[in-house]
Image (spheres, one colour):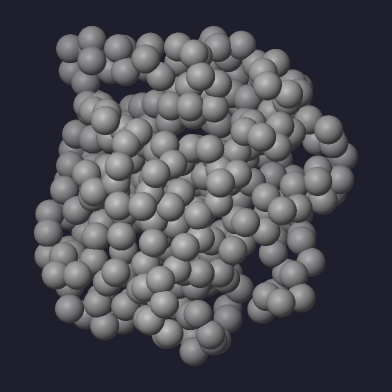
Length: 319
């Protein structure tokens, strides 16, 4: 299963999407069973997989398997199987605010993704239309905001557990590439004092060990003043501080919602822009096509088109 049955120009011909939820994995060692949405093209085989980790938006259901439809639907229409878990941090679960790991469950989030990879065959069996259609060797992870933090841990970022002082390594070598969208940057003196106290796991974020290829997407107006004393460049830290190979897509005039990727017409998108969302959709798709299928021209073609636009929505740099 080294080659996908989807051609390099699949972006020009979206297919109908099958979306099933909730798909449930029994998890006796978790506060509740792991529920997820699985979206896939109705045709095709040897399909690559994207694990999509939600952020922590103001709306109740965006932080769950029901969020991020603009990305999940697009990726699925163009040849990916997208799996979206509801992490324990989702307010849809109404867990006690003082539960172990609350409020953001940083470790549990990453463990959710590892559990999904461990049980891809179970997920296939739960969605009969997918049985035998997944390529288990081509797995990517994506995440927005706190979901990007989760994705970065799986890609190799490390931190010190504030509970026991031990370094945490949650890298998963089965994940071949990542998309980090509006991700928190480094900790230390870059954090607001209140956040450093409330979320101490962010203090020790170390991107220097994040060696898996990744595309970092950052808005040049994403100030995140509730998190950092730095400006929008804080969100570029996963690119600047991590070793290559990495790429950085900087979106002009974009704020934390990156134009509206968390959902269709959601109130917390402060920079609503269908054109910006389209750019994120196309560039992220193209990046993963080329990373998972070396030699595929999609990423270079997308970058060339962006650079040639007389009014570009952003810029790309790589190392």
